[in-house]
Length: 355
Image (tube, rainbow, N blue to C red):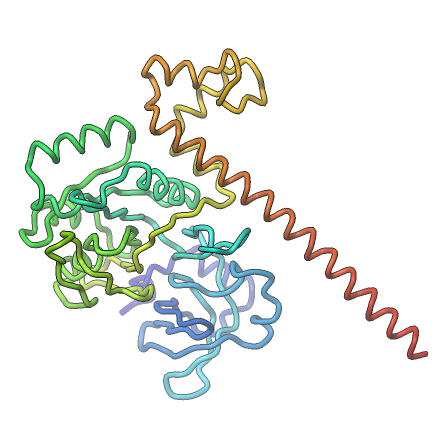
C-alpha cells in the first residue's frame, strides 16, 4: 500500500514539510474511542493516544482528532504510537451535539462525498434529506442521495416518491438500490474513485452497513436482520470507522443519526435552499424574516407555487436553529472569556497577597 491509497495528497505533503512534521510518521485515523485512536499507516495499524501538549492546548473538540483525520505520529512500543499533530482538514462533516447547546459533534473529516442513505419504505423524509444536504454543503462535501430498499414498495409508489424528491431537491445525484437483489449497486460503483473518501450518512436500519459489505465484497460490518413488524433493519453499527476497499475507494461508516442539528452553517443553507435565498434579495425589507412582512418575495413565491411550502417551512425551522446556535455560541464565548479574566485576576491577587 502507498500513502496515496489512504487519500494522501500534495497539499498535505507541503504542510508536512513547512511545519517540520517530516520527522514523524504519517497516518490516518480510522477509529476513535473517546481519547484513544486507531491510526492506519502504509504498513500497520497503531493504537494511538495524544501527547499531553496537544490534549491540553485544544480549545475545542475541533482541535482533537476525528475519524478521517491525518495525524503525525511516533511509535513508542509495538503497535502503539503517540499523536503529535493533526493536519489541516479539507472538509469536516459536523452536527450540533445532541443535548449540548453551542457544541458540535464531528461526524467525519476529509470527506469528498457524502452518501445520504434513506430507505423508501418507512424512513423516507425529504425534510431530513434537506438537513443532511445542508451539513454536506456546509462542509464542501458533494452529496449523493441513495434511496434503499426499493424492493419493499411498488414501482408506482417509488416513482411518486422520486417525483416529490426531484421537485424539491435540484442538481443532486439520486440512486435507487436494493441490497438483496443488487439493483443499483453498479450505479454506485460507477461513481467511486480510487483515493476518494465517501461517508455513509443516514438513520439506523436503512442499510448503510449492508451496502458497505456489498461494495467491499466482504463482511466488514455486522448487520441486523430486518424486523418483520417494522420492515427495518436493527441498529448494529455503534462507532465510526474508516475502511479502504480493494477497489481503492475509502469509506467511513457511521452509527445511525436520529437528530441532525444545525450549527453555524449559513453557507450550507444558502446552497441547499439557493432558490429561496435568491428570492430573498427581492424582498421589500432588508431585514425581512419571510414570515409576516408585506412584499416578501419568498411568501409570494410560496403562494403562487414557485417554492414548495414544506421546503419553505423546513428552511425557516433550520434558519431559526442556526441563529439560535450562533447566539448560544457567542454567549458561551463571552462566558469563557469572563471566566478566563476571573481566573487571571485571582492568580494576580494571590501573588500580591503572597508578597
